[in-house]
Each structure stands twice: as C-alpha cells, then as structure tokens.
Amino acid sequence: MDSKYKLTDEELISRFQSGDEGAFEEIVNRYADRLLNFAYRFVLDREEAEDIVQDTFLKVYQNRHAYKEIAKFSTWIYTITGNLAKTILRKRRNRKLFFFSRTAPEDKDKEIEFPSTERLPDSQLEGKIEEQVIQRAIIKLPEHFRTVIILRDIQDLSYEEISNIINAPLGTVKSRINRARLRLQEELEHLRE
Amino acid sequence: MMNCYQFRNSISNFIDEDITFKNRQDFKQHLADCPACRKIYQSVLATRQSMRHFPQISVTDNFKLNLRNRILSDRNAAFQHNSQKSFTLNRIPSFAYGFAAAIVAVVAGIFILQSQNATTNLTTPPPIVRQQMTQPPAVQPQKIAPANPARTQPQQPRYTSAGTQPVRIDTIATENAPKDPVNDYQQNYEDRIKTVKDQR
Image 1: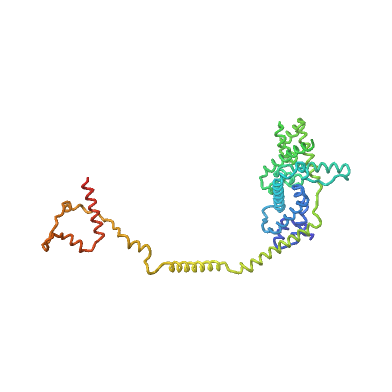
Image 2: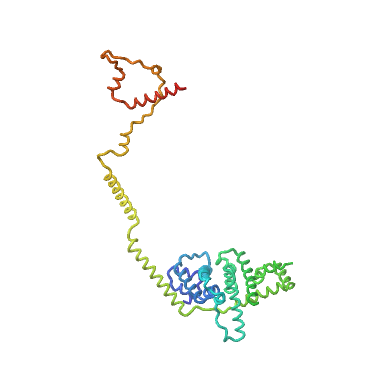
C-alpha cells in the first residue's frame, strides 16, 4: 500500500484500468474529502454533497476505461463532480419552481441551514459567522462564477486545472475569476448591510 | 497611469501574481492614490484569506461501506443484465435474424398470392378483359385520307334487273356483309371531315 502513495493519480487509474481494485480504493482515499468539500460548497448540503461524491466514484468505477491520459485525472474527476452538483442544483431549482406557489415568503431564508454557533468561543464564533456570510454570498453567485471561485479560492486549483475542468480558455478563466471575486464583494456588502 | 476600471480588472492578476512589472507598478500607484479601489482590494484579499481557512469536512465513517455496497449492487445488476442477454439473444447468431425475416417474407408472399387467386373467379375473364370485350375497339385513324371526289357527288343508285322493285346493290351488300366496326368508324370520321370542309 505504501508504494501506492508514491504513485501519481494517472498511474493509479492506469492500474485500476488493468484490474487492480486496490488502486481504486487509493483513489477514493485521495479524493473523497476534496470532492466532498467542493460539492458541499456548491450545494451547501452535506448529505447531498456526500451523495454527489458517491455518484462520482461510482461513475469513475463504471467508466474507468473512458479516462484517457490526455488530461490530468484530477480535472476529470472534478468535472464529473461539478456536473453532478450542477444537476442537483437544477433539480432543486425545478422543485422550487414547482412548489413556488405553496412556499410562504418567509420560508426563503430557511433553505440554507448552517450549524449552530451558540457554544463557540468568541474568536471561533467570529470566524464561523464570517464563513456563513461568505458561504451565503457564494450561494447567491451565478453557477459559472460559483464554480470558479470554489475551485480557485477554496480548493486552491491552478488556472490551468480550472480551465480544463470547466472546459474554457485560460483567458476566460482568469477574467471570470476576477469578475466572480468582485461580484462576491458586492454580495457580501449587501449581506453585511 | 491606471484608472479605476483597469485597476479592478487587474485585482486577480495582482493577487495571483500574474501581472507584468509595469502593470504591477501602476497597480501599486493606483492602490495608494484611490481609497475606493483600496477598499475593494482589501476586501477581496480578506475574503480570499477567509475562504482558504474554511474548515474542511470529511466523509462519514460509513461512506466507503456505502460506496462498496453501491458498486457491488451495480456490478450484480450488470451481471444479471448480461446473463439475461446471453441466455436469450446473444446465443442466436446475428445472420439467423435475417434468414428468419426472409422466410417470413416468402411465406407471407405465397399466402397473399394464394388468397388473391382464391378470390378471383376462374370461369369469368378478368375485369380488364371484360371491359375490352364490351367496348368497341377504339381504333384511331392512322391518317386522314384525302376527300374522295367521287363521294362529293351523291352516288347514283344501281339497280338490279332481278325484280320490279328497285333494290340498291350496295344496300344488299351491306345488309349481307358482316358489319365491320372499324370501317364504319373510319367512314363516319371521313364524312365528318368532309362536312367540316364543305362548311368552310
């Protein structure tokens, strides 16, 4: 198992394609938490985020031979997770539209539920509140801004990787990240007022 | 010098250190001169710092177990699907489908032909033949014969010396001779043409 830690992601998927199930387990170990954080910041629901990550690994398992070593494995797996997260959001939006007439106006704020911060020390409380405010602002961003800002500022991926994940030119990614950051400031200003 | 618009467009490039030396100098200059842009820049930087320190969440303990179960059930479903396929359709070679279709087509063709024969009465001729039999043969005149000058004059009846009553020979001939519809038609046609010419 130790030798597997030295292997690159691409080598692991190659082994898995050759029938090594242990390599798949190693991929799960490497990516489960990273993908969970990405999905969670996207949909802001832990259960749904975990379902998304499970679906992602299931897809990797089923379509292991679809991966060709022309792109990095990380971009491939992030693309799958991002697409699944977008599908969840779309379903949620459709559900919301369907039940729009039945939902009371005051229910709108209940859709994002954050964990309680009552018993936290002051410094942590401040950080938690800040996190919640920023997360609320991220959720308000359009989907294409949200994706790039999570990948860049939370997941700390490079411009090139983001470019491959969202399948957009590097210049587009750079300008989109800049606009997303500025837009996030606007949303934060609204929330802090 | 950099204006506010250029400054705001360059914030990410500056933060991510993806900026030329000249632009970096201009950016720093504008940052020092413009309080509004400075506020935005500091806010972007602070938000980015906060996001980098967001608490990381981890998958639950039973995540791997659930995943393994899902993979197993998926694999079983795929195996069942494949085995069903292999017991029914995969065993039959593909050319057999074409062969079977050809046989069905031949049998159906024979059946249709037989049923058509059964419905038609063999003692009576087919409807097209019957129609041709009842209708006079429509023979188109090949070419219009020039008007016979002899026919322009009323023909003098010729009489036989056999009886007292004058009998026209041509009448006898026509009465005794079998009627030829083709000749009748041609005669009528020529007469009509002649009439038209006379009218002119």
